Image 1 (cartoon, rainbow, N blue to C red):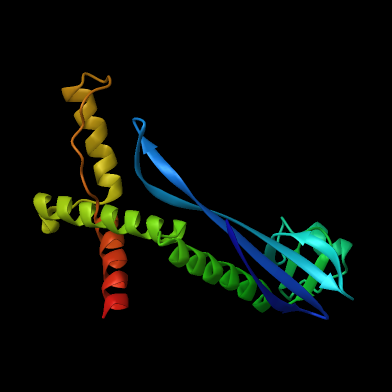
Image 2: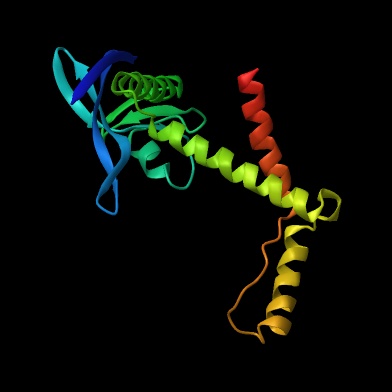
Length: 195
């Protein structure tokens, strides 16, 4: 197990950010098939050398979910704030963004030390693979023949009614124009990052 600490200014106090990580084996049918990293993070607000608050960093923007917090703390409803735990609040979203970025950087650093991928990297790979599958299916159908999501929904209902007699059964996979467009955006973003 390893831990990293970094500090971020939090108004007149300091946000001490700690990320702890360890590697756990991944099993499939009783066999080790790989490793995954488990991370935890905590944010402590330190003022005058003492920890005065602990919790997650959240960015507050005035809306129906945050109106009570704004009213209770007499905050300006036209401004954004960063909140840690139940009490620590500082003006601006920049601090919250910085804390979240520091956490991601430390997770990446620990994953590199353990020579494994971060949860974020694994998720990104899954999204890319899914986008590649969608594009491949769209090419098989013929990109010029793709229908909208609404058209596919109607087609599915008719297919089920006719071929499955209204019950459950096999329904061919169809890619909508919207799915294809989203998949190409995902893959284009990756291409731009690689070049």
